Image (tube, rainbow over all chains, first blue to last red; front, side, top):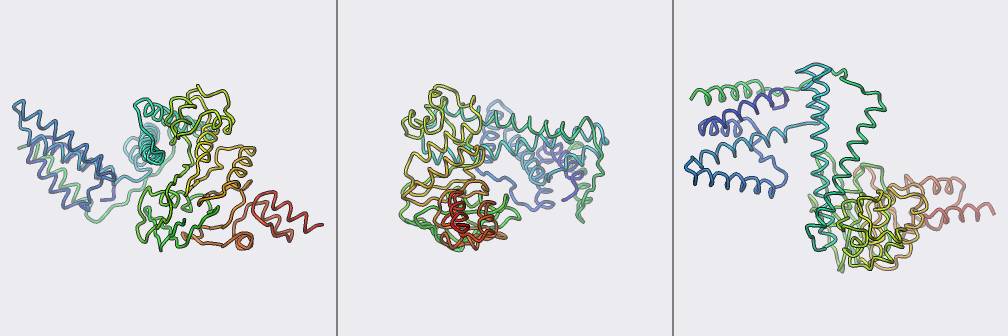
Length: 208
Length: 232
């Protein structure tokens, strides 16, 4: 799927379906198997396993308190799978395109710009943490809580510096509010059908 | 002691870098424009990830490290002296070498990036690594500290030093020059012969070559001496 509008629509619809019922989650999983490249779109398996263990623990708590733990596990796992697929499908500038398309060149542009900056910061933080892990490994030193807090404090300052630099660049370029953007969206041959199926699954799950 | 790149290929999305060759004892300069793959190569040499094809074979390497371009990644000490101690080094001489004498009790967060860079480089260069990889060590340094760093690198007598940089103002004495050309790491050979094959030499080397002088090595002093000799 290439069109970010349809990716967003499908993500919302399938998340709703998965949240609504276990059958909705199964249908959403089937959609993921049929309509996506079926690659597990998480770069770091350790983080993915950590997330899954967290969901597993919560499901166990739900089961112990008399709820349907298995259904919870299935529904939340599928929601995470769909969310990670949507995140991995993202391309730079898409939020700006989406915002401008949906809400115009003033409010939409600004919301899109903020979303781009947030995602950019998250990606920067991800890179920073990878480099921090590597540097600690190279140093082969003993990591204490105090040293970790110190390292993270310095990284936080780096992130704030980046945000300030970005603000300065926007100010220097005369940015006040809004902008002019004519977004163009690519579309794969099956995008429309896949999105329609996602909406259908959501409707079915909500009705059942 | 050697590092052998055996038909190595590194891929990052659409980016591709291939490399074959041997890093033997001495100082190796790897140059190339921004985005050519120097940092990717540095990370691979440091063992941060495996090549997508081929191998990196390290022989006789007991200790190795990588100096990352941004010093913040290395800093884990709550104070400057504890940072030096975290590298297993006595703080006083390290802080003195970094130009931070008397500031051992300060929090690293209060230092500028340039000061942190000096501290981290001083810590790294205070130890004798078999394999030392320096990724853009000149960034964030002023011209005085660039010259100081070049002097410190020139003093390294043992081990393999791989210096990856696009520095244009001040380089140390090196033994071999490598260049990344169109996604391929190419050895230009030993200095001084390699200087004539260098497609993007620093401005002062280019000026010397245009004046008909071949510097003995690649420091600004070498270029100046060569020009003086040529012009009598």
